[in-house]
Length: 89
Figure 1 (cartoon, rainbow, N blue to C red):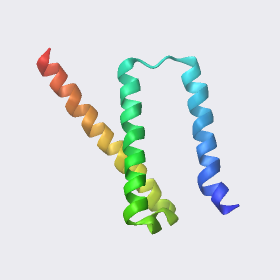
Figure 2 (figure 1 turned 90 degrees about the vertical axis):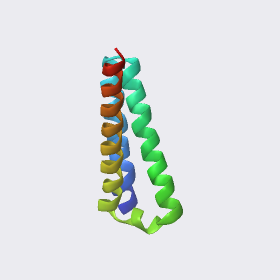
Figure 3 (figure 1 turned 135 degrees about the vertical axis):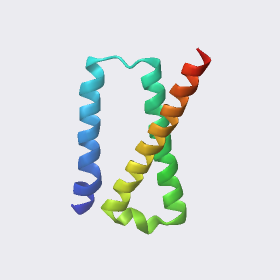
């Protein structure tokens, strides 16, 4: 039951919110690229954590930390990309 509360139920909520939100609006190519970047970073961080320190995933705060790291990294990459695209234009 604890597993469902910590992992499955939040995932179901996220999927439902995303499905409802995305069905109303269409993502632009740029937004789709950002979404792919973020999801790829999350998968990478989870994979590295599973390989090197799987015990970290037992802690909710460290798992949330991975999410924050992925968000910050994606933000930095997007900011740098936007800055260089403005320079090229």
